[in-house]
Structures are given as structure tokens and as C-alpha cells.
Amino acid sequence: MKKNIGNLLFVVCFLFIGMSVVDAANYCPNATKKELSRAANYVKANYEVIDNSEVKEITVDGNTTTYKVPNFAFEISIYNLTENLYAEISTTKNGEERRVYNSDVTDGVYSFIDNNAGDIYNYNITIKSDGECAGLSLKTIKFTKPRYNAYSEFAYCQNSSSYYCQKFIGTEINIKSTNEFLNKIQVNNEKNDPDVKNDESIINVIQKNWKIYLFIFLGVLFVAGVAIIIFIILKRRKNKEWKL
Image (cartoon, rainbow, N blue to C red):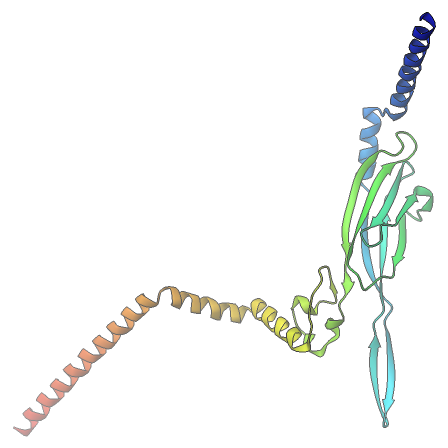
């Protein structure tokens, strides 16, 4: 019995010591946390479009025409990643994750190329501590990588402010035919056209106040009718007097 009690006490002490060691390993002083958080706040991330498109020529029946072969990529950059920090980068496209440390940085910037120009997905960049308090999550940067919109190359899109004509879009568009595309950019342009907006506002005002405008119109007609009658009576009287 005493032996069993001794074994039990030994196990309890072992667990207690083990928990203390784990707590000590996970412990991070507040001053260190503040310093790490301050450094993480300076970390920024963005993307830039790289245009690798080519202009080529084609000759048919002696006539040479140029055409463009679109080819775009995105350069993802992370700035100000200091030696006590690292970044975990993942996307909602494939879930793959990469870690970037200060040793991977060149002149304060870490950059890589994303060649997927045909899909829209989100980037999640989590900034964590390296060294003291290692693995502590400090900041998350999120942004949406857009995709290339082939409709933007249509001649119909020249000088168009329509969302469907933007070269890069962050939300999918579902267009099944050219007629549907033309209808959508026309509707969008009408919404953004100040002249059309003014015309619509005038129509709305008239529709809301048509009774007042009808009353004014009838009043004008009445006044005009009375004026015409008076004019005719006076003219007849004048003619009679002249005959006399």
C-alpha cells in the first residue's frame, strides 16, 4: 500500500514538474511581446502586376496586322521583416504554405512571382516571432489577388468605365454571350454617366410631383384661354367702332 502511494506521489510530482517546464517554455514577458508587436506593425505586404505581354504581327494577303498576346504575372512583396520575425504565407487557392525568414530578405524586401493570372484568391500572411517567444502570432495581413479580364481587350471597352471592362477584377463575372456582355457594359456606363443620371433625376422628380405640374399646366392653359377670349372681344369691339 505504501509502495503504491509512493508511486502515485512520484507520478504527480513528475506531471507537476513537466507542466511547469512547458509553462516556462511558453511564457513570454510582456515587454518582449510589446517589442515584437511593434516590429510586426511595420511589416507590410502588397502585389504589383508584371506585364510580360507580347505584340506580334501576322500578314494575310499582303496586309500586316499586329495583335497582342496577353501574359501577366503578380509580384508579391513583404517589407520590413526583421531578424526576430518570420512570415507564414498561404493562399485560399491551394492551401500551400511557405515560411519566410529574415535571412531570405534582400534590401529589406522579400519578393516572389505568382504566375497564376487566371484565378482570384486570397493571400494570408501571418507574422510570427522568431527566437525569443518563438511561434507567437503577432499580425495577419490579407489581400485578394485579382485575375486578368480578357473582356478588357474588346474594342467595346475603349474609354469605358464599366467594371466588366477593367483589366484586373477581384470578383468573378458570369457572362455567357457577347450580347450579354454588351448589355452589361451599357447598363454600367449608363449608371456612371452623369448626363443619364441627371435625366433620370428629372424624370423621377416629374413622376413624384406630376399632380402639381398638371395643376400648373391646366392653370397656364386657363390663363392663356382667358387672354385669348379677351383679345378676341376687344378686337371685335374695335372693328365695330371703326365701322361706325
